[in-house]
Image (cartoon, rainbow, N blue to C red; front, top):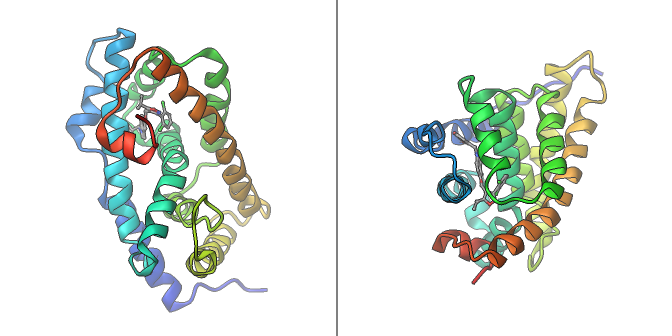
Length: 232
Ligand SMILES: CC(C)c1onc(-c2c(Cl)cccc2Cl)c1COc1ccc2c(ccn2Cc2cccc(C(=O)O)c2)c1
């Protein structure tokens, strides 16, 4: 049947896409990527600074999701804590796949590879980056997928899951229509995107292990990261 995006879906798309595009890592932080220091210690510090900046970007984006600020306050925190790592994997994947000016990608990859993360986590991480890259998502799809990730009802400690479902459903419906309109030659494209969300969840597990091994080597995080990742 003919897929049509309604007026209110267009309005929702605009709000989400504008919020997504408006909040970017400050250029000075992204520029630091290209600095020449390459010690594992300095890479770790730079990545820590980027993660901290990304969490701030993520909080601002989330506040612009229609209805989010009307959710129960504890649930708002539970959703942010439960989705931060996944949203940042999505964001760094999107940056890898195209956004950053060429030359930054290798540098970012190199810094991640030499920041004290053990080999066993590199493979799933860079496989995920590749699996996102091949999808060639448009900005609107990236923004919606990030909002859908944040609005996952079954995060730990979420009390009113129905309220979160009521916000997530219209985003899923809009993303489904967008995929049909943007990728008419790929009828499975929407299902593919949802498959990435499942892959994202497995990365949470690897990330928890990464944090543990960093902490074992006495690496320090910023107060914001300690709060969102319940460390220290
Ligand atoms: C604390 C730190 C060592 C850490 O722990 N886990 C992860 C970690 C790692 Cl090593 C991989 C994936 C996710 C996380 Cl949390 C990280 C680093 O988190 C990052 C690093 C880079 C990231 C991000 C998010 C995006 N980017 C890339 C980027 C670069 C330039 C501009 C922009 C932009 O948005 O404009 C984005 C997070």
